[in-house]
Length: 372
Image 1 (cartoon, rainbow, N blue to C red):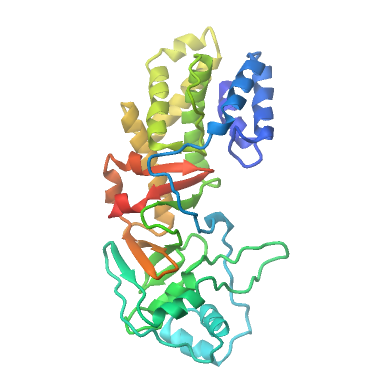
Image 2 (cartoon, rainbow, N blue to C red):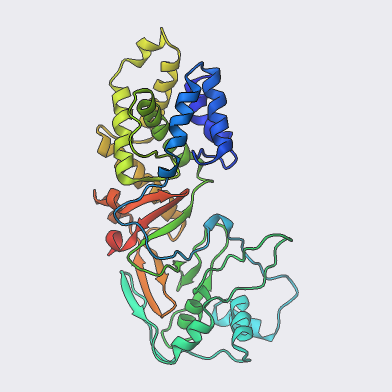
């Protein structure tokens, strides 16, 4: 069993596609690998198990409010079945919008004609805050948890629509704001489109919390990079007798943890691994993993490596939803809305490592500190 198998197959052979030290089956996979390598299995596994409670990394900006969001990977588009259009469809097509959302609004409010919001609400190419006003707030709250009927196979519970999404659609599309709103929810599309610009919708109780970018179990390339980075770091710490007071892995880490992990990666880079591999083949696998990182990321120091990894991961996620130059909006049930203008240029700030992290395989970013 090679080190590459230890670092990579450990990820690929686990139930979820990435290793977690708090998952007994994942630990058994690691135990089997270590046994085949004739390494001190019991001591290593026991050491990792003792650190189990510290797997979730807490940062200075840890979210205290209850999170309210739907996993991106769990969202399933709801397509309008053919042959089920009524007279409202033609009008909705002319005006834009969503027939499905229109019918849902009528059903939820118990009306035949959708009411128009009484106030103007801005939408601009920057970061800004808006507040639902007056009588609009009642309808906003009535629509807060509205979701289309599920049209998926038996046993699938998701409808692909988060809290507040229909409220936001109604507030802007049925107003005097001159903004045409269309639904997304197809493939990697953002939740809504405002005059063609993507708007991804979140519903956290604080605009200043770290907002989730969604889970990344399907992002194989970045997951592999993180597995190699933290795999080398974990082996270096465990075998070097420096277990530390917490365990980090590709699913739970902070920006600072990335810097610490790259310190170990660079330490291996400074060693003549090719020469050592003549005596111990395992070093050839370490070299292969370090070479793989070098081919994917540009860095000479640990901080540069951490920044390169963080920026790649964030850009890959944000490119899909909502897209560079588009918006992510956080909604609150009390009508507060904060639209963040997402630009990749903002990710060049070296403080980005202080603003991002991962918890339970979901990448999170403090949008307020990043985008204003």
